Image 1 (cartoon, rainbow, N blue to C red):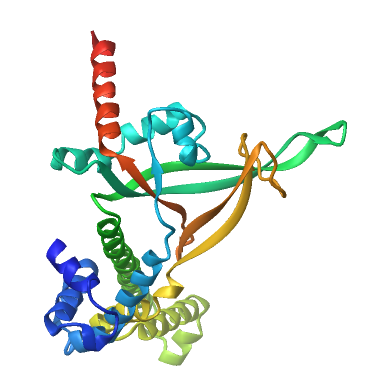
Image 2: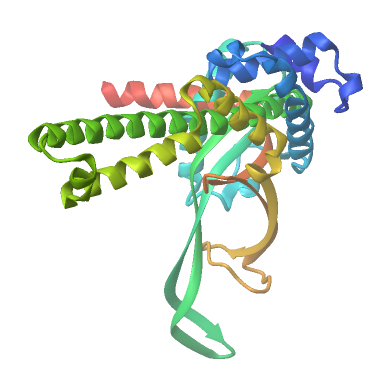
Length: 337
């Protein structure tokens, strides 16, 4: 997979700069991650080609827009100040690093790794209104509405020995995220059609029972009966919805169209934005910087499902990480003795 990524991400974004083999491999990844049956659609590679190239270009720009990584060490409180705002305490921060699966997996697989590791810190941000005290001149005002900002679910993604490699892997991850969104929409379309067909079968069965019960009535008299008229109305609505989704033998084309639409307009489904924010030491949002607050830029990643994440590239010391893991092992051993 890494060979494929290097082939894709290491070249320019214009169609002419992509070898045909690279484009085909990327298209195959779309089918693999969304619905393998898309391969049975005539000319599916042709239909996906331009959309795939658009998305490759887009995610490259998205990742290139990430700020340079900040360097983080864990040997003193001062050296952790770059991450302190994202955790409620130093202990919480160290625990998050020690328990992170991707960092642990990277260290296991790279025992002789370089001295530093670059990764993306990904977390969720929440804001809520609280009431607290605030100094106004020489007067302490109480029950003042304040916005408290907290961060949770911190994870370190795509650790690598270089910033460039981490960025390349993040491009792949962003591309796969677009495919995941497409796959979910395809799954929803399949489920919707299945439910409509089940409801149509049920309504047709009810209608059959009523026809047998009132077999002596003419068709126009039968359709005028309230129960039958209601079923016929519901059946007509279901048929219209099924028709809107597409004929059964055309559903694969519908699913392919979903993938093409998302990949052709990636900016509508995954985008980044920047937010200038000032937080004090208690995580309260402030309008102006003070000696007890810090001003910085938050880079957020958003998707069309309403999810938002704060992103921050960091450079970590491999030795520090190994020492933290060793400390955890010693602590766990002493706890169980």
